[in-house]
Image 1 (cartoon, rainbow, N blue to C red):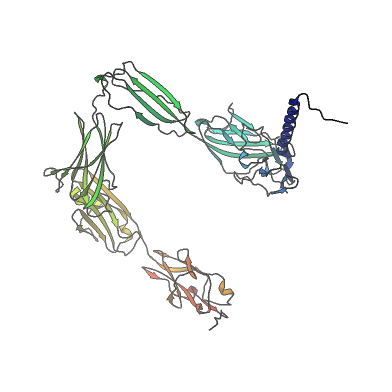
Image 2: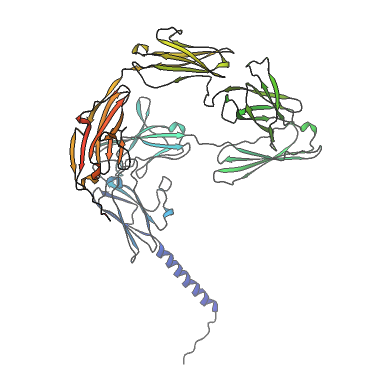
Length: 627
Protein backbone atom coordinates (compact mmCIF):
# COMPACT_ATOMS: atom_id res chain seq x y z
CA UNK A 1 0.00 0.00 0.00
CA UNK A 2 1.39 3.29 -1.15
CA UNK A 3 1.30 6.30 1.08
CA UNK A 4 2.22 9.94 0.37
CA UNK A 5 4.94 11.34 2.52
CA UNK A 6 5.33 15.00 3.37
CA UNK A 7 8.55 16.45 1.87
CA UNK A 8 11.29 16.99 4.28
CA UNK A 9 11.93 20.51 2.89
CA UNK A 10 8.74 22.40 1.94
CA UNK A 11 10.86 25.18 0.42
CA UNK A 12 11.75 22.82 -2.46
CA UNK A 13 8.17 22.88 -3.73
CA UNK A 14 8.15 26.67 -3.59
CA UNK A 15 11.37 26.91 -5.64
CA UNK A 16 9.96 24.57 -8.34
CA UNK A 17 6.75 26.59 -8.47
CA UNK A 18 8.64 29.87 -9.00
CA UNK A 19 10.76 28.26 -11.76
CA UNK A 20 7.69 27.01 -13.64
CA UNK A 21 5.98 30.42 -13.42
CA UNK A 22 9.14 32.15 -14.69
CA UNK A 23 9.43 29.79 -17.67
CA UNK A 24 5.78 30.37 -18.56
CA UNK A 25 6.23 34.14 -18.35
CA UNK A 26 9.39 33.97 -20.48
CA UNK A 27 7.56 31.88 -23.07
CA UNK A 28 4.76 34.42 -23.22
CA UNK A 29 7.17 37.31 -23.81
CA UNK A 30 8.81 35.50 -26.67
CA UNK A 31 5.42 34.79 -28.18
CA UNK A 32 4.75 38.54 -28.49
CA UNK A 33 8.07 39.34 -30.19
CA UNK A 34 7.67 40.58 -33.77
CA UNK A 35 9.08 38.25 -36.42
CA UNK A 36 9.95 40.06 -39.68
CA UNK A 37 10.54 38.00 -42.82
CA UNK A 38 12.83 38.03 -44.68
CA UNK A 39 15.10 38.34 -41.66
CA UNK A 40 17.68 40.56 -43.35
CA UNK A 41 19.05 44.05 -42.81
CA UNK A 42 19.56 44.79 -46.53
CA UNK A 43 18.08 43.46 -49.76
CA UNK A 44 18.67 44.28 -53.44
CA UNK A 45 15.79 43.74 -55.90
CA UNK A 46 15.44 44.62 -59.58
CA UNK A 47 12.85 47.12 -60.73
CA UNK A 48 9.64 45.46 -61.89
CA UNK A 49 9.95 42.53 -59.48
CA UNK A 50 7.47 42.01 -56.65
CA UNK A 51 8.09 42.53 -52.94
CA UNK A 52 6.51 40.65 -50.06
CA UNK A 53 7.32 41.23 -46.40
CA UNK A 54 5.57 39.42 -43.56
CA UNK A 55 5.42 40.28 -39.90
CA UNK A 56 4.16 37.79 -37.34
CA UNK A 57 2.67 38.95 -34.05
CA UNK A 58 -0.27 38.20 -31.82
CA UNK A 59 -1.03 41.94 -31.78
CA UNK A 60 -2.02 44.37 -34.48
CA UNK A 61 0.95 45.35 -36.68
CA UNK A 62 1.84 48.68 -38.34
CA UNK A 63 4.25 48.90 -41.29
CA UNK A 64 6.73 51.67 -41.99
CA UNK A 65 7.60 51.96 -45.69
CA UNK A 66 8.47 54.57 -48.36
CA UNK A 67 5.22 56.26 -49.30
CA UNK A 68 5.99 59.97 -49.53
CA UNK A 69 5.81 61.56 -52.97
CA UNK A 70 8.18 64.36 -51.99
CA UNK A 71 11.57 65.46 -53.30
CA UNK A 72 10.38 64.13 -56.70
CA UNK A 73 10.28 60.53 -55.38
CA UNK A 74 7.61 58.33 -56.97
CA UNK A 75 6.51 55.14 -55.20
CA UNK A 76 4.35 52.24 -56.37
CA UNK A 77 1.01 50.96 -55.09
CA UNK A 78 1.02 48.66 -52.07
CA UNK A 79 -1.35 46.28 -50.29
CA UNK A 80 -1.45 45.21 -46.62
CA UNK A 81 -3.40 42.12 -45.49
CA UNK A 82 -3.64 40.24 -42.18
CA UNK A 83 -4.38 36.61 -41.38
CA UNK A 84 -5.87 36.69 -37.88
CA UNK A 85 -5.63 32.90 -37.56
CA UNK A 86 -1.87 32.75 -38.04
CA UNK A 87 -1.19 36.28 -36.75
CA UNK A 88 0.68 37.17 -39.98
CA UNK A 89 0.48 40.61 -41.58
CA UNK A 90 1.71 40.81 -45.18
CA UNK A 91 2.97 43.90 -47.04
CA UNK A 92 3.08 43.58 -50.85
CA UNK A 93 4.16 45.66 -53.83
CA UNK A 94 3.36 43.94 -57.13
CA UNK A 95 5.81 45.83 -59.34
CA UNK A 96 8.62 47.79 -57.71
CA UNK A 97 9.92 51.12 -58.99
CA UNK A 98 13.25 52.61 -57.98
CA UNK A 99 11.44 55.19 -55.81
CA UNK A 100 10.44 52.30 -53.52
CA UNK A 101 14.03 52.13 -52.24
CA UNK A 102 14.12 52.72 -48.50
CA UNK A 103 13.45 51.36 -45.03
CA UNK A 104 10.74 48.75 -44.36
CA UNK A 105 9.83 47.81 -40.82
CA UNK A 106 6.92 46.72 -38.64
CA UNK A 107 5.94 47.45 -35.07
CA UNK A 108 3.09 46.63 -32.72
CA UNK A 109 2.67 50.28 -31.73
CA UNK A 110 2.36 53.09 -34.22
CA UNK A 111 4.23 55.62 -32.07
CA UNK A 112 7.33 53.38 -31.82
CA UNK A 113 8.20 53.90 -35.49
CA UNK A 114 11.19 56.23 -35.47
CA UNK A 115 12.87 58.23 -38.19
CA UNK A 116 16.11 56.62 -39.36
CA UNK A 117 19.18 58.87 -39.19
CA UNK A 118 22.95 58.54 -38.96
CA UNK A 119 22.69 57.83 -35.23
CA UNK A 120 20.47 54.72 -35.51
CA UNK A 121 21.39 53.05 -38.81
CA UNK A 122 21.64 49.72 -36.98
CA UNK A 123 17.97 49.77 -36.03
CA UNK A 124 15.80 46.76 -36.85
CA UNK A 125 14.21 46.61 -40.28
CA UNK A 126 15.13 45.97 -43.89
CA UNK A 127 16.61 48.51 -46.28
CA UNK A 128 15.72 47.64 -49.87
CA UNK A 129 17.66 48.88 -52.89
CA UNK A 130 15.55 48.76 -56.06
CA UNK A 131 18.11 48.52 -58.88
CA UNK A 132 17.23 50.02 -62.23
CA UNK A 133 18.81 51.03 -65.52
CA UNK A 134 16.81 54.29 -65.50
CA UNK A 135 18.31 56.18 -62.58
CA UNK A 136 21.23 56.10 -60.19
CA UNK A 137 19.28 58.08 -57.56
CA UNK A 138 16.02 57.33 -55.78
CA UNK A 139 14.67 60.65 -57.04
CA UNK A 140 14.89 62.35 -60.43
CA UNK A 141 14.69 66.11 -60.26
CA UNK A 142 16.13 69.17 -61.96
CA UNK A 143 14.74 71.35 -59.19
CA UNK A 144 16.60 72.31 -56.05
CA UNK A 145 16.02 70.07 -53.03
CA UNK A 146 15.79 72.76 -50.37
CA UNK A 147 16.85 72.15 -46.78
CA UNK A 148 16.74 74.67 -43.93
CA UNK A 149 18.21 73.93 -40.50
CA UNK A 150 19.38 75.81 -37.46
CA UNK A 151 23.05 76.12 -36.62
CA UNK A 152 24.36 73.02 -34.82
CA UNK A 153 21.67 70.68 -36.21
CA UNK A 154 22.36 67.62 -38.33
CA UNK A 155 21.80 68.05 -42.09
CA UNK A 156 20.80 65.27 -44.47
CA UNK A 157 21.21 65.92 -48.20
CA UNK A 158 19.01 63.04 -49.50
CA UNK A 159 21.23 61.82 -52.36
CA UNK A 160 20.31 58.14 -51.93
CA UNK A 161 21.50 55.79 -54.73
CA UNK A 162 19.42 52.91 -56.12
CA UNK A 163 22.34 50.56 -55.56
CA UNK A 164 25.10 50.52 -52.91
CA UNK A 165 27.69 50.01 -55.64
CA UNK A 166 27.36 53.58 -56.91
CA UNK A 167 30.01 56.06 -55.80
CA UNK A 168 28.34 59.41 -55.03
CA UNK A 169 30.39 62.61 -54.89
CA UNK A 170 29.40 65.92 -53.32
CA UNK A 171 30.55 69.27 -54.68
CA UNK A 172 29.72 72.88 -53.90
CA UNK A 173 30.13 76.01 -55.98
CA UNK A 174 33.00 77.91 -54.36
CA UNK A 175 33.98 80.73 -56.69
CA UNK A 176 33.61 79.90 -60.37
CA UNK A 177 34.49 76.20 -60.23
CA UNK A 178 32.76 73.36 -58.32
CA UNK A 179 34.82 72.19 -55.34
CA UNK A 180 34.77 68.72 -53.79
CA UNK A 181 33.37 68.77 -50.25
CA UNK A 182 36.03 67.45 -47.88
CA UNK A 183 35.12 67.76 -44.23
CA UNK A 184 35.32 65.56 -41.14
CA UNK A 185 31.73 66.60 -40.43
CA UNK A 186 30.42 65.33 -43.79
CA UNK A 187 29.88 61.60 -44.37
CA UNK A 188 28.06 59.56 -47.00
CA UNK A 189 25.59 56.81 -46.16
CA UNK A 190 23.96 54.99 -49.12
CA UNK A 191 20.77 54.56 -47.09
CA UNK A 192 20.54 58.27 -46.18
CA UNK A 193 22.68 60.42 -48.45
CA UNK A 194 25.26 62.97 -47.34
CA UNK A 195 25.09 63.80 -43.62
CA UNK A 196 26.68 66.97 -42.23
CA UNK A 197 27.09 66.95 -38.46
CA UNK A 198 26.95 70.10 -36.31
CA UNK A 199 26.07 72.43 -39.16
CA UNK A 200 27.68 75.87 -39.33
CA UNK A 201 26.61 79.11 -41.02
CA UNK A 202 29.40 78.62 -43.57
CA UNK A 203 27.74 75.37 -44.72
CA UNK A 204 24.99 77.38 -46.44
CA UNK A 205 25.52 76.79 -50.16
CA UNK A 206 24.27 75.06 -53.31
CA UNK A 207 25.40 71.43 -53.45
CA UNK A 208 25.57 68.88 -56.28
CA UNK A 209 25.39 65.11 -55.75
CA UNK A 210 26.80 63.26 -58.78
CA UNK A 211 27.26 59.70 -59.99
CA UNK A 212 29.56 59.10 -62.99
CA UNK A 213 29.93 55.34 -63.21
CA UNK A 214 29.07 52.32 -65.40
CA UNK A 215 27.76 54.51 -68.19
CA UNK A 216 25.59 56.56 -65.83
CA UNK A 217 25.99 60.31 -65.40
CA UNK A 218 23.39 61.88 -63.17
CA UNK A 219 23.20 64.87 -60.82
CA UNK A 220 20.94 66.06 -58.03
CA UNK A 221 21.01 69.67 -56.85
CA UNK A 222 20.39 70.72 -53.25
CA UNK A 223 20.23 74.11 -51.54
CA UNK A 224 21.18 74.30 -47.86
CA UNK A 225 20.39 77.28 -45.65
CA UNK A 226 21.78 77.29 -42.11
CA UNK A 227 20.23 79.94 -39.87
CA UNK A 228 20.93 81.11 -36.35
CA UNK A 229 18.90 79.70 -33.50
CA UNK A 230 16.22 81.98 -32.19
CA UNK A 231 16.97 83.09 -28.66
CA UNK A 232 14.27 84.68 -26.62
CA UNK A 233 15.08 87.57 -24.35
CA UNK A 234 15.45 86.52 -20.70
CA UNK A 235 12.41 87.12 -18.51
CA UNK A 236 13.63 88.78 -15.28
CA UNK A 237 11.71 88.85 -12.01
CA UNK A 238 13.16 90.66 -8.96
CA UNK A 239 11.92 90.09 -5.42
CA UNK A 240 12.98 91.69 -2.16
CA UNK A 241 13.20 95.38 -3.07
CA UNK A 242 11.16 96.43 -0.07
CA UNK A 243 12.15 99.15 2.41
CA UNK A 244 14.79 98.12 4.94
CA UNK A 245 16.13 99.85 8.04
CA UNK A 246 19.70 100.91 8.68
CA UNK A 247 21.84 98.06 10.07
CA UNK A 248 19.62 95.25 8.77
CA UNK A 249 20.32 92.71 6.01
CA UNK A 250 19.04 93.18 2.46
CA UNK A 251 18.22 89.94 0.59
CA UNK A 252 17.26 90.32 -3.07
CA UNK A 253 16.60 87.52 -5.56
CA UNK A 254 16.58 87.79 -9.34
CA UNK A 255 14.97 84.95 -11.33
CA UNK A 256 15.68 84.67 -15.05
CA UNK A 257 13.89 82.38 -17.49
CA UNK A 258 16.38 81.59 -20.23
CA UNK A 259 16.68 79.05 -23.04
CA UNK A 260 18.75 75.95 -22.39
CA UNK A 261 22.25 75.84 -23.88
CA UNK A 262 22.19 79.64 -24.06
CA UNK A 263 25.29 81.12 -22.39
CA UNK A 264 24.43 83.62 -19.70
CA UNK A 265 26.06 85.73 -17.04
CA UNK A 266 24.16 87.28 -14.13
CA UNK A 267 25.76 90.30 -12.48
CA UNK A 268 24.57 92.68 -9.79
CA UNK A 269 25.09 96.43 -9.70
CA UNK A 270 24.82 98.27 -6.38
CA UNK A 271 25.55 101.86 -5.30
CA UNK A 272 28.63 100.59 -3.44
CA UNK A 273 30.10 97.82 -5.58
CA UNK A 274 33.20 97.64 -3.39
CA UNK A 275 31.41 96.62 -0.19
CA UNK A 276 31.43 92.95 0.91
CA UNK A 277 28.46 91.03 -0.41
CA UNK A 278 27.38 87.46 -1.16
CA UNK A 279 25.69 86.04 -4.26
CA UNK A 280 24.17 82.59 -4.81
CA UNK A 281 23.04 81.11 -8.11
CA UNK A 282 20.50 78.28 -8.40
CA UNK A 283 19.34 76.59 -11.63
CA UNK A 284 15.99 74.84 -11.91
CA UNK A 285 14.94 73.26 -15.22
CA UNK A 286 11.19 73.64 -15.32
CA UNK A 287 10.41 73.51 -19.04
CA UNK A 288 11.54 71.48 -22.04
CA UNK A 289 13.40 74.36 -23.65
CA UNK A 290 14.14 76.76 -20.80
CA UNK A 291 15.66 76.95 -17.35
CA UNK A 292 14.94 79.12 -14.34
CA UNK A 293 18.14 80.69 -13.02
CA UNK A 294 17.84 82.40 -9.63
CA UNK A 295 20.58 84.64 -8.29
CA UNK A 296 20.44 85.97 -4.73
CA UNK A 297 22.26 89.08 -3.46
CA UNK A 298 22.81 89.52 0.28
CA UNK A 299 24.00 92.87 1.73
CA UNK A 300 24.74 92.98 5.46
CA UNK A 301 24.57 96.08 7.66
CA UNK A 302 22.70 98.28 5.17
CA UNK A 303 23.34 102.04 5.42
CA UNK A 304 22.10 105.19 3.67
CA UNK A 305 25.06 104.86 1.29
CA UNK A 306 23.35 101.83 -0.23
CA UNK A 307 20.50 103.96 -1.53
CA UNK A 308 20.44 104.45 -5.27
CA UNK A 309 21.22 108.01 -6.49
CA UNK A 310 18.48 110.07 -8.05
CA UNK A 311 18.12 109.60 -11.81
CA UNK A 312 16.68 111.92 -14.42
CA UNK A 313 13.33 110.30 -15.34
CA UNK A 314 13.18 108.84 -18.84
CA UNK A 315 9.84 109.84 -20.33
CA UNK A 316 8.01 108.45 -23.39
CA UNK A 317 4.78 109.96 -24.76
CA UNK A 318 2.78 107.82 -27.20
CA UNK A 319 -0.60 108.02 -28.91
CA UNK A 320 -2.59 104.83 -28.30
CA UNK A 321 -5.68 105.92 -30.26
CA UNK A 322 -4.14 105.38 -33.70
CA UNK A 323 -4.41 108.93 -35.11
CA UNK A 324 -0.63 109.45 -35.07
CA UNK A 325 -0.35 113.22 -35.74
CA UNK A 326 -3.62 114.44 -37.33
CA UNK A 327 -6.68 114.47 -35.09
CA UNK A 328 -10.30 114.85 -36.29
CA UNK A 329 -12.01 117.74 -34.57
CA UNK A 330 -14.41 116.86 -31.75
CA UNK A 331 -13.07 113.31 -31.54
CA UNK A 332 -11.53 111.65 -28.45
CA UNK A 333 -7.83 110.75 -28.44
CA UNK A 334 -5.96 108.71 -25.81
CA UNK A 335 -2.32 109.15 -24.85
CA UNK A 336 0.10 107.20 -22.65
CA UNK A 337 3.03 108.66 -20.75
CA UNK A 338 5.71 106.30 -19.37
CA UNK A 339 8.43 107.27 -16.91
CA UNK A 340 11.45 105.26 -15.73
CA UNK A 341 13.92 106.32 -13.03
CA UNK A 342 14.74 106.27 -9.31
CA UNK A 343 13.11 107.46 -7.25
CA UNK A 344 9.78 106.98 -8.97
CA UNK A 345 8.38 110.07 -10.64
CA UNK A 346 4.96 111.68 -10.47
CA UNK A 347 3.37 112.41 -13.84
CA UNK A 348 1.32 115.52 -14.61
CA UNK A 349 -0.44 116.58 -17.81
CA UNK A 350 -0.82 120.05 -19.42
CA UNK A 351 -2.44 121.15 -22.67
CA UNK A 352 -1.39 124.42 -24.29
CA UNK A 353 -4.28 125.67 -26.43
CA UNK A 354 -3.14 127.73 -29.44
CA UNK A 355 -6.21 128.37 -31.64
CA UNK A 356 -4.36 130.55 -34.14
CA UNK A 357 -1.47 128.13 -34.68
CA UNK A 358 0.78 130.68 -33.02
CA UNK A 359 2.61 130.02 -29.77
CA UNK A 360 2.33 133.70 -28.76
CA UNK A 361 -1.28 133.55 -27.55
CA UNK A 362 -1.81 130.19 -25.86
CA UNK A 363 -3.89 129.15 -22.87
CA UNK A 364 -2.45 126.43 -20.59
CA UNK A 365 -4.87 123.89 -19.06
CA UNK A 366 -3.93 121.38 -16.38
CA UNK A 367 -5.35 117.91 -17.03
CA UNK A 368 -5.79 114.88 -14.78
CA UNK A 369 -4.67 111.47 -15.94
CA UNK A 370 -4.88 107.99 -14.44
CA UNK A 371 -1.51 106.99 -12.96
CA UNK A 372 -0.22 103.47 -12.32
CA UNK A 373 2.93 102.72 -10.31
CA UNK A 374 4.22 99.15 -10.65
CA UNK A 375 5.75 97.50 -7.55
CA UNK A 376 9.40 96.35 -7.61
CA UNK A 377 10.17 98.51 -10.65
CA UNK A 378 11.04 102.13 -11.36
CA UNK A 379 8.25 102.45 -13.94
CA UNK A 380 5.24 104.76 -13.73
CA UNK A 381 2.47 104.91 -16.34
CA UNK A 382 -0.28 107.48 -16.87
CA UNK A 383 -3.09 107.57 -19.43
CA UNK A 384 -5.32 110.44 -20.45
CA UNK A 385 -8.20 110.86 -22.90
CA UNK A 386 -9.03 114.30 -24.30
CA UNK A 387 -11.64 115.65 -26.71
CA UNK A 388 -9.75 117.47 -29.45
CA UNK A 389 -11.39 120.83 -30.17
CA UNK A 390 -8.46 123.09 -31.00
CA UNK A 391 -4.82 123.20 -32.00
CA UNK A 392 -2.20 123.00 -29.32
CA UNK A 393 0.60 121.16 -27.57
CA UNK A 394 0.12 118.25 -25.14
CA UNK A 395 2.72 118.06 -22.33
CA UNK A 396 3.65 115.09 -20.17
CA UNK A 397 5.86 116.05 -17.21
CA UNK A 398 7.58 113.51 -14.93
CA UNK A 399 9.22 114.75 -11.69
CA UNK A 400 10.87 112.94 -8.77
CA UNK A 401 12.22 114.65 -5.61
CA UNK A 402 14.78 116.77 -7.41
CA UNK A 403 14.58 116.34 -11.18
CA UNK A 404 11.94 116.77 -13.92
CA UNK A 405 11.69 115.80 -17.56
CA UNK A 406 9.15 116.96 -20.16
CA UNK A 407 7.76 115.40 -23.35
CA UNK A 408 5.56 117.29 -25.82
CA UNK A 409 3.30 116.34 -28.72
CA UNK A 410 1.82 118.73 -31.29
CA UNK A 411 -1.94 118.34 -31.73
CA UNK A 412 -2.92 119.15 -35.32
CA UNK A 413 -6.61 118.95 -36.25
CA UNK A 414 -8.50 118.27 -39.50
CA UNK A 415 -12.11 118.32 -40.63
CA UNK A 416 -12.39 114.67 -41.63
CA UNK A 417 -11.17 111.52 -39.94
CA UNK A 418 -9.83 110.01 -43.19
CA UNK A 419 -7.43 112.91 -43.82
CA UNK A 420 -4.09 111.52 -42.61
CA UNK A 421 -1.49 113.54 -44.54
CA UNK A 422 -0.33 117.14 -44.52
CA UNK A 423 -0.71 117.31 -48.31
CA UNK A 424 -2.05 114.80 -50.82
CA UNK A 425 -3.25 114.55 -54.44
CA UNK A 426 -6.76 113.26 -55.16
CA UNK A 427 -7.73 112.09 -58.68
CA UNK A 428 -11.36 111.73 -59.77
CA UNK A 429 -10.52 108.80 -62.10
CA UNK A 430 -7.69 106.39 -62.82
CA UNK A 431 -7.72 106.07 -66.63
CA UNK A 432 -7.59 109.10 -68.90
CA UNK A 433 -8.50 109.26 -72.60
CA UNK A 434 -8.23 111.87 -75.32
CA UNK A 435 -11.10 114.33 -75.02
CA UNK A 436 -11.73 113.80 -71.29
CA UNK A 437 -12.15 116.71 -68.89
CA UNK A 438 -9.88 115.74 -66.00
CA UNK A 439 -9.61 117.18 -62.52
CA UNK A 440 -6.84 116.81 -59.94
CA UNK A 441 -7.08 118.13 -56.40
CA UNK A 442 -4.18 119.01 -54.12
CA UNK A 443 -5.64 118.92 -50.59
CA UNK A 444 -3.58 120.36 -47.74
CA UNK A 445 -3.92 121.55 -44.13
CA UNK A 446 -4.21 125.32 -44.51
CA UNK A 447 -2.63 126.43 -41.24
CA UNK A 448 0.55 124.43 -41.94
CA UNK A 449 1.39 125.98 -45.33
CA UNK A 450 2.02 129.52 -46.47
CA UNK A 451 2.00 128.67 -50.17
CA UNK A 452 0.82 125.74 -52.33
CA UNK A 453 1.18 125.62 -56.15
CA UNK A 454 0.86 123.24 -59.12
CA UNK A 455 3.78 122.64 -61.47
CA UNK A 456 4.15 120.99 -64.87
CA UNK A 457 7.90 120.84 -65.17
CA UNK A 458 7.82 124.65 -64.78
CA UNK A 459 5.41 126.71 -62.66
CA UNK A 460 2.25 127.84 -64.42
CA UNK A 461 -0.65 130.15 -63.53
CA UNK A 462 -4.45 130.25 -63.98
CA UNK A 463 -4.21 131.49 -67.56
CA UNK A 464 -1.81 128.75 -68.71
CA UNK A 465 -3.35 127.54 -71.99
CA UNK A 466 -6.33 125.26 -71.33
CA UNK A 467 -5.54 124.63 -67.67
CA UNK A 468 -7.60 126.08 -64.90
CA UNK A 469 -6.75 126.23 -61.19
CA UNK A 470 -9.44 126.99 -58.65
CA UNK A 471 -9.62 126.85 -54.87
CA UNK A 472 -11.98 125.19 -52.40
CA UNK A 473 -11.53 125.95 -48.73
CA UNK A 474 -12.87 124.65 -45.42
CA UNK A 475 -12.00 125.42 -41.81
CA UNK A 476 -8.78 123.42 -41.76
CA UNK A 477 -8.31 121.91 -45.24
CA UNK A 478 -7.86 123.83 -48.49
CA UNK A 479 -7.93 122.38 -51.99
CA UNK A 480 -6.08 123.60 -55.08
CA UNK A 481 -7.98 122.14 -58.04
CA UNK A 482 -6.25 121.64 -61.39
CA UNK A 483 -8.62 121.16 -64.36
CA UNK A 484 -7.62 120.17 -67.90
CA UNK A 485 -10.39 120.37 -70.49
CA UNK A 486 -10.31 118.21 -73.61
CA UNK A 487 -7.09 116.49 -72.54
CA UNK A 488 -4.72 115.44 -75.34
CA UNK A 489 -1.68 113.20 -75.75
CA UNK A 490 0.47 116.35 -75.59
CA UNK A 491 -0.73 116.91 -72.00
CA UNK A 492 1.11 113.81 -70.80
CA UNK A 493 3.68 114.83 -68.19
CA UNK A 494 4.63 114.67 -64.52
CA UNK A 495 2.50 117.08 -62.50
CA UNK A 496 3.60 118.31 -59.08
CA UNK A 497 1.86 119.89 -56.11
CA UNK A 498 4.38 121.66 -53.88
CA UNK A 499 3.66 123.17 -50.48
CA UNK A 500 5.88 125.45 -48.38
CA UNK A 501 5.53 125.01 -44.62
CA UNK A 502 4.96 128.00 -42.35
CA UNK A 503 7.77 126.78 -40.10
CA UNK A 504 10.14 126.30 -43.05
CA UNK A 505 10.82 123.49 -45.50
CA UNK A 506 8.55 122.11 -48.18
CA UNK A 507 6.78 118.94 -49.33
CA UNK A 508 6.08 117.80 -52.89
CA UNK A 509 3.65 115.17 -54.24
CA UNK A 510 3.48 114.14 -57.90
CA UNK A 511 1.66 111.94 -60.39
CA UNK A 512 2.25 110.94 -63.99
CA UNK A 513 -0.59 111.77 -66.38
CA UNK A 514 -0.90 109.13 -69.12
CA UNK A 515 -3.45 109.80 -71.85
CA UNK A 516 -4.74 107.00 -74.11
CA UNK A 517 -6.64 106.97 -77.37
CA UNK A 518 -10.15 105.62 -76.75
CA UNK A 519 -11.31 102.51 -78.57
CA UNK A 520 -14.94 101.64 -79.29
CA UNK A 521 -15.82 98.10 -78.14
CA UNK A 522 -15.75 95.27 -80.64
CA UNK A 523 -16.52 91.56 -80.32
CA UNK A 524 -13.43 89.57 -81.29
CA UNK A 525 -14.52 85.98 -80.54
CA UNK A 526 -17.85 84.28 -79.94
CA UNK A 527 -19.46 80.89 -80.34
CA UNK A 528 -22.97 82.24 -80.97
CA UNK A 529 -22.85 83.53 -84.58
CA UNK A 530 -26.66 83.79 -84.86
CA UNK A 531 -26.90 80.07 -84.11
CA UNK A 532 -30.32 78.48 -83.75
CA UNK A 533 -30.21 75.37 -81.62
CA UNK A 534 -33.14 73.09 -80.79
CA UNK A 535 -32.73 71.19 -77.54
CA UNK A 536 -34.63 68.20 -76.23
CA UNK A 537 -35.62 68.41 -72.60
CA UNK A 538 -32.79 66.01 -71.74
CA UNK A 539 -30.17 68.12 -73.56
CA UNK A 540 -31.56 71.22 -71.90
CA UNK A 541 -30.47 69.86 -68.53
CA UNK A 542 -26.81 69.98 -69.63
CA UNK A 543 -24.63 73.06 -69.11
CA UNK A 544 -24.41 75.46 -72.07
CA UNK A 545 -21.65 78.09 -72.34
CA UNK A 546 -21.92 81.18 -74.56
CA UNK A 547 -18.78 83.24 -75.29
CA UNK A 548 -18.50 86.96 -75.97
CA UNK A 549 -14.81 87.99 -76.04
CA UNK A 550 -14.39 91.75 -76.52
CA UNK A 551 -11.78 94.49 -76.68
CA UNK A 552 -11.90 98.24 -76.22
CA UNK A 553 -10.53 101.18 -74.21
CA UNK A 554 -11.69 101.64 -71.51
CA UNK A 555 -12.42 97.94 -70.99
CA UNK A 556 -16.01 97.34 -72.12
CA UNK A 557 -18.81 96.47 -69.73
CA UNK A 558 -20.62 93.34 -70.93
CA UNK A 559 -24.27 92.60 -70.25
CA UNK A 560 -26.30 89.60 -71.35
CA UNK A 561 -29.83 89.84 -72.70
CA UNK A 562 -32.71 87.54 -73.53
CA UNK A 563 -35.05 88.74 -76.24
CA UNK A 564 -33.60 92.24 -75.89
CA UNK A 565 -34.12 92.53 -72.11
CA UNK A 566 -31.40 92.24 -69.42
CA UNK A 567 -30.92 88.67 -68.21
CA UNK A 568 -31.31 88.23 -64.46
CA UNK A 569 -28.43 86.24 -62.97
CA UNK A 570 -29.30 83.30 -60.70
CA UNK A 571 -28.38 79.68 -60.06
CA UNK A 572 -29.63 79.02 -63.57
CA UNK A 573 -27.64 81.80 -65.27
CA UNK A 574 -24.15 82.86 -64.14
CA UNK A 575 -21.19 84.71 -65.67
CA UNK A 576 -17.40 84.28 -65.61
CA UNK A 577 -14.22 85.83 -67.02
CA UNK A 578 -15.33 89.44 -66.50
CA UNK A 579 -18.82 88.70 -67.89
CA UNK A 580 -17.37 87.44 -71.18
CA UNK A 581 -18.81 83.98 -70.57
CA UNK A 582 -22.47 83.13 -69.87
CA UNK A 583 -23.00 79.77 -68.17
CA UNK A 584 -26.49 78.29 -68.53
CA UNK A 585 -26.87 75.40 -66.09
CA UNK A 586 -30.29 74.23 -67.38
CA UNK A 587 -33.22 75.39 -69.50
CA UNK A 588 -36.99 74.90 -69.53
CA UNK A 589 -39.40 75.36 -72.39
CA UNK A 590 -40.27 78.88 -71.28
CA UNK A 591 -36.55 79.79 -71.38
CA UNK A 592 -36.55 79.46 -75.18
CA UNK A 593 -35.54 82.69 -76.88
CA UNK A 594 -32.75 84.81 -78.33
CA UNK A 595 -29.68 85.21 -76.09
CA UNK A 596 -27.22 87.98 -76.89
CA UNK A 597 -24.36 90.03 -75.41
CA UNK A 598 -23.94 93.81 -75.39
CA UNK A 599 -20.49 95.41 -74.94
CA UNK A 600 -20.13 99.12 -74.31
CA UNK A 601 -17.90 101.72 -72.72
CA UNK A 602 -18.28 105.48 -72.37
CA UNK A 603 -17.10 105.98 -75.95
CA UNK A 604 -19.57 103.67 -77.63
CA UNK A 605 -20.85 100.13 -77.89
CA UNK A 606 -20.33 97.12 -80.08
CA UNK A 607 -22.65 97.20 -83.08
CA UNK A 608 -25.34 94.60 -82.70
CA UNK A 609 -24.92 91.97 -85.38
CA UNK A 610 -25.76 88.38 -85.98
CA UNK A 611 -22.50 87.14 -84.42
CA UNK A 612 -23.44 88.33 -80.93
CA UNK A 613 -26.63 86.31 -80.47
CA UNK A 614 -27.91 82.74 -80.40
CA UNK A 615 -31.43 81.37 -80.49
CA UNK A 616 -32.05 78.49 -78.08
CA UNK A 617 -35.30 76.54 -78.29
CA UNK A 618 -36.35 73.81 -75.89
CA UNK A 619 -38.93 71.29 -77.08
CA UNK A 620 -40.76 68.44 -75.36
CA UNK A 621 -40.15 69.91 -71.94
CA UNK A 622 -41.59 68.78 -68.62
CA UNK A 623 -45.34 68.74 -68.32
CA UNK A 624 -46.77 69.48 -64.89
CA UNK A 625 -49.90 67.63 -63.84
CA UNK A 626 -52.88 69.79 -62.93
CA UNK A 627 -55.01 69.01 -59.93
